[in-house]
Length: 339
Image (cartoon, rainbow, N blue to C red; front, top):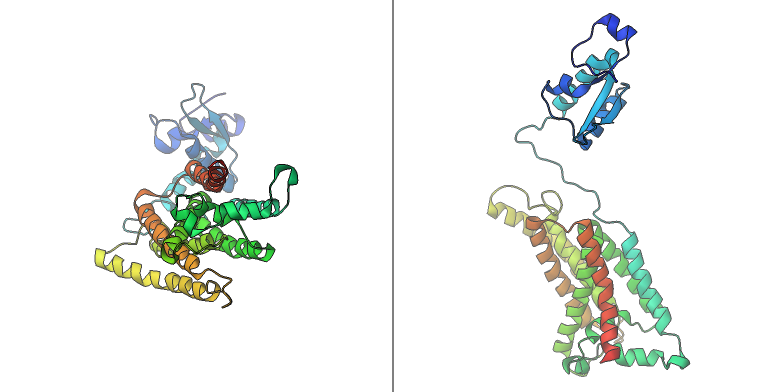
């Protein structure tokens, strides 16, 4: 392979189709080699302009080069220089917010499938193992008297128990919507972790408020916790998602934050009034819904505040949070059976 860095004449370009390194032509003779991303960007530009080229990794592995035939060297250099001129950042310009979802639907569907599958499993009778649906209820419901006596696993296990099929289906559908919408903003792992934690805190505060004679089951406490998380993180969309509260003075940003928070907060309260109050026959635990929603608001607000300064968890950390969230009920049930 012959590499030339000068500008070839007409006859040489026609009669000898040698390949040239584009880096000296674009950046100068003593320029360092391209990184892999830079080489891919140059290749994309040349491909879009139908300029034949090759990507070549240097023998010492120190970088990459983009090779073109001498006939196309001048045109290729002009296209790449034009690309940099057109994409040069303008001083004082504001970048558009990144509206791409942080996480997809699959982790949420998996978590909800586990919730429904567990309902199917524990409602079956296993005489050989001496396992009956009533035993699961006795051991895992949010019995306030038992919780305040030290059976703390019930705060989490109660989220996985349901009275009947429509109960678990309703929580899966409604909760799935809230969890998915929040996961698009902050990631599935963080959303599920906050949802379970909000459900645990909601059951705790509900037990403290209603006393030792109260008992409840259901994922709805966590469902309204997810609604609270979604409502609380929405104001932090100002200024490009969870990356800041915009520009300007501190007072201006505070006013913008409060004004933006009113709509999602009001929507969450409206949802609590419509779905959380129940049918008036005592079949719905309004206290658990209220405390779950309040816990979600607090956790979501704290998450949004920290995310504007520290950023969101990376993919690896978010996956570990998702695994931790799914393991919390498993660990709680293990604690209950072994206690």
